[in-house]
Amino acid sequence: MPALHQALGLSYSAAGLLTSLPVFLMAAGAIPGAYLVSRVGARRAVAVGLALVALGAALRGALPSPLMLFGLTVVLALGIAVAQPAMPSLAQAWFPTRVGRAIAVYSNGLLVGEVIAASITLPLLLAPFGWQVALAAWAAPAAIVLALWLIVTPTSEGTAPTAGAWLPDWGSGRMLRVGLLMGGASLVYFGMNSWIPDTLDARQAHDSIPLTLGALNAMQLPISLWLSFRGDTMLGRRWPYVVAGIGSTLAVAGYALAPASTAPFWAGMAGAASSLAFILNLGLPALLSPSEVARTSGFMFTVGYGAAFFGPALGGFAWDWSGHFRFALLPMLVGAFAMLAFGATLPGVRRQAQPAPSAAGS
Image (tube, rainbow, N blue to C red; front, side, top):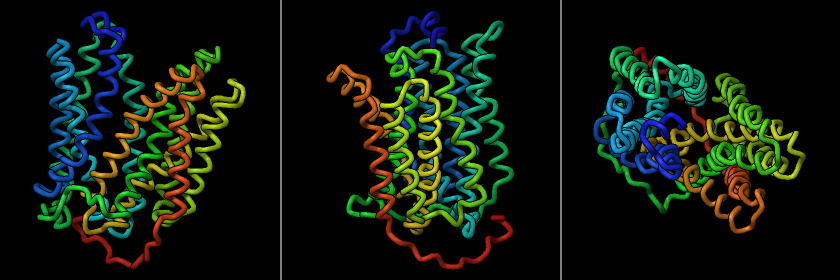
């Protein structure tokens, strides 16, 4: 951001919009992504998404102007948005007896990719490269993965286009529950990521910011790895959401009320608890709505990323209104209660033995 401020003359409000724009677009583009899945199939929808990511990333650095930077950030974010609703559909089609494990492996990819990107971008920013290379370099892995995706992944019947509905069924209690569960997990994780720096500054604990943010994000990895082995047995059960809701409630309350020196501990607990719910949420559409996975997933991501976008903003309004940093954490507390309430009342799902995946999907 400092490099962009200097090179392009961005204001602080413009910089804030640039960082929040992808999250908003991932919410706005999830339902159109479900439409794309219904028309071209899940596998092709992911290919379209990867192509948009590669194009947006490459041109963001090659065309250095504020207008192009914002416009191509929209392209990149929409690429992610249209691909995400396809992934639960692919997990169901390719691994029908291992949906929980497939979703956990996919989540590992999300988390490890986040860590790699955060680690490599800063060195790319330094001379002789600059911010253009730091942004454009991410077109290369997107293009490589797109090529591998088209060559390696199977074109099974389960990923073909369908003529089914793609708009959310607002009268479906199951669909609404899946969305609100994702919204609760997103509120806790993204809200804590947003407000840890400012709230620690307000508590005169600026030096604790890197460790606290690191703990919040690092504690997701062991949960994701654990679910790679246990995801199939935990998917659709109520008790993991109860654990996630209680853990998130304790974490947010502890972070707000305990001494600032304990902030990394509470942040780590919040990261672990919210990731437990987030990862299991990704498998719920295949379990609760097997005939309309992309449709349910699109709604789930819309609510989840919508909460991630609007929740921290509501926390900021609460802080301004009250004059106290603890009020900024109230939306995260609401998210923790939502995980607990909706998870504890999750409808029971009868697990039936399914045929093993075909050779094309194994």
